[in-house]
Image 1 (cartoon, rainbow over the protein chains, first blue to last red):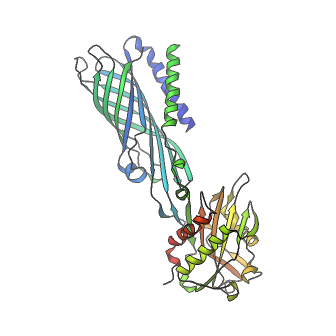
Image 2 (cartoon, each protein chain N blue to C red; image 1 turned 120 degrees about the vertical axis):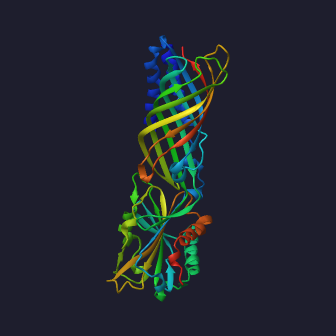
Length: 209
Length: 212
């Protein structure tokens, strides 16, 4: 987990530094979001069925013009569920009764593009769509009672999102955003399929100067 | 420079938030939830063929590989619970001098030094913890036909309840076979107030022990 944190911190620093040169020609904005995540499909059915209120995302995007921006995105989400005690049959023939706890942390690091179709015209509500692709660092811990095993993997990640932006004022480059993002996260370890999820986001954006 | 510093602050803050908003699964467990109960049996054995049983009158304490016999109030609670749930399963309690069909040994296993003891190590030293002479079978050996389940590393402590086939020891080449094992691991074991519920859990998940 510590190594994942270090890598994520590096990305947080490296992506805006790489964009800072271009900032002289356009505008670099930071988007900070609280993220509420809903596991979907086999993630929900096999690993964690509970929604996660513990997450955030941070994007730093370079605006080529008022409609289109491109940059880097990182995030963090913590999923956890404790299942009631149950008895499981192991392949070796044993029966084991345990409270199983699944704990999953994801740290996506992506290249992300954002398109706001009304960018040229002022509007208090600016819709946008976004696309992203990159990697997802996944830490998966499973505990039988207090006895746990841990796996850390890096997998592909892609996302598509949509939402609205509301500026703080007519002349302001800062504002609020509310949106949803579908995260596609293949995860084929331990017989599982994916960690796909839907994120609902609320946050602020502001120019970096 | 100011930008780099502010970005470093963001990175540090992000790491702090990541650590802070993560749920710790271990802190969210009660002692009861922390425990796991593992049972296994010799699947070739028909438990209906056994009628009588006896439980060893003390508990073997295996501490970092060295064994002694003890009978504390906690040990007595486990012995009483084993008798209770064997009788509820339909077996008749007899003294060890009445040639019981099966014998029950209870062992507390501790590992306090560095490193771990593996469960196969426990089986490997079994003759040293439990002399077959106790059951009236001096000179006999032990047989463990299903080693596959003993792959656990014991890092703190474990309670093991072992059911031995005394009835067929002579016909099995002077070998006392282990026919059922229950293992409890986790927090709060070796506890008088929860001994009964721990043993009950082992029997509850071993429905094949119930006599028809």
